[in-house]
Image 1 (cartoon, rainbow, N blue to C red):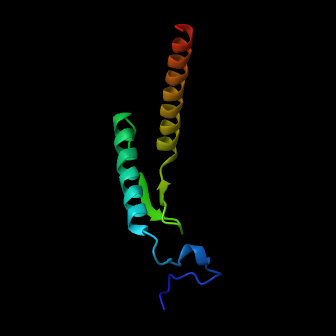
Image 2 (cartoon, rainbow, N blue to C red):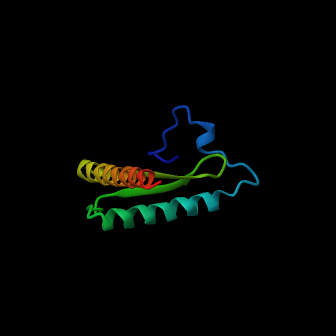
Image 3 (tube, one colour):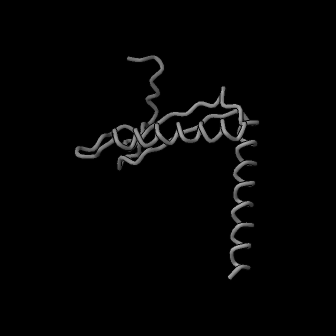
Length: 99
């Protein structure tokens, strides 16, 4: 038995595969999302050298991306998201004034 195996109450949904569910497609979408996110972070000037991601799927085959990133990268990502949200809100306000 694997010495790293954690046998404390494994969750069935975490390891059972259901016949007919396309897990590969979900995994691929998670891999694609990881690539997109890393590219966007790079474009925003965020250091991604220590960012790690794990592509996975849920029991229904939906893709899931799990991230592990340094605090500074997380704060920079939050800041970039807020700046973009603010830009969208301002653009929406300007559009409503022109009507």
